[in-house]
Length: 148
Image (cartoon, rainbow, N blue to C red):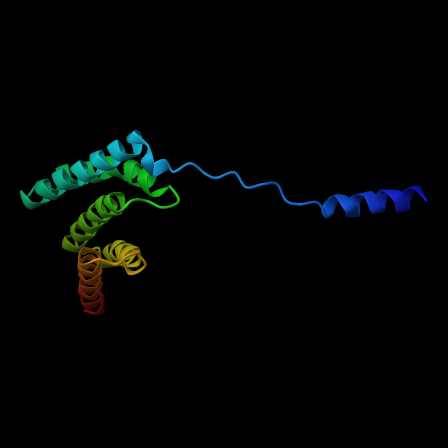
């Protein structure tokens, strides 16, 4: 009899209503998030400038410095467009550097990451579509070199 009562009690506790969901705070509204996005965008610009000035080691150091910031700004539920653009710029530059060093498969992987970012970005804008087409073109370039 005691077993039946215990089984009944266990079954009844399973029938209770789930706890109310606590709304999650929007991390992108925090000033530190916006500051981190600004730092990442600045690092991406500096790295791009260094690469174009023929200083790939400086560009690589800046990319490496930006990777933790990229992870941080993309780790929220819905990253902002500015955060996604800054991360995309950093990955695109890294991919172009790998492409110039004939590391085609690694470069292709970074370009595919960018393609996925922009293919599923909502709402699509002319800029996001342009970024998606650039990623597609970079992937095609990698595939041409891989096939050689």
